[in-house]
Image (cartoon, rainbow, N blue to C red; front, side, top):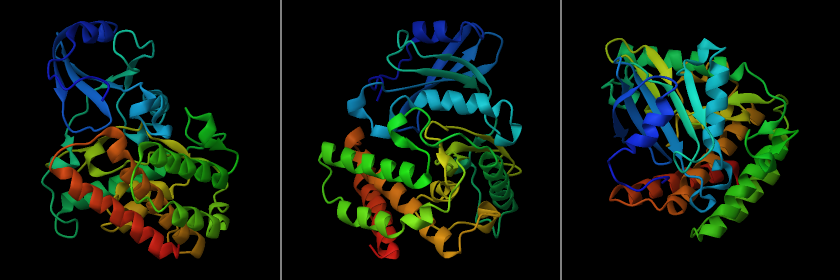
Length: 322
């Protein structure tokens, strides 16, 4: 983590960070994240803003996670011109790493509650959940309508390429190197490389870099609990330019099933698309597995979470025939 676990916010730093926006009246650290440290700051005029920072120490990060707060700022700035992305307004950035140890984004505070706390029932029984799913599909369509110049992570030249095959292969290779560096046991590196080799032609079907959030699970989606309206999308720090199918895997990280309302018009059934969706699940299962020891997760929940991540990875590899 970029800071220690003390619950007392660094008020002097936060006061300086929000000064261009307003005068700090109070602050609290928010729970729920495993990568960044986030504070909700109340200004003296009653407005609330969110201050987010993340570790700058490469030893605590996966290769693709370096300078990710800068990616978040880039995506929020882009969203300012594309309201269909439903992201909070970017109010300020600080990349000096002087007020806090890492890069900082200051963004508007969203209304609503995280989808995970809204109390929705199954979408076939609860119209609020059905509405939220449909509106998430619309957000994905808005994201994927935006195109970039190169495939890969915006802040990582080593994880970029002129083709999706090149970028995705580099992304997976970096994860395998991270696993080896961290001593992660029982990573099926040979099967992962075999799956990439066998299905490389499917990756070549992606010819245009599309904006992909990659982490559209319900915890990053703010909704109106009364109506199901999707009010906002947060945490685009892992966004990249690539295959929209990565967003389907990210919205369904534990492979519970992708609702048709979310998939929208994306092809998920042709042989190439089906293979790419499985490769996306393989990649995400690998990310979730490798990050556990790199971040040093602790708690009673870790063993069950790790087992679920490894099941996702193994299931994808089995389906890919690797």
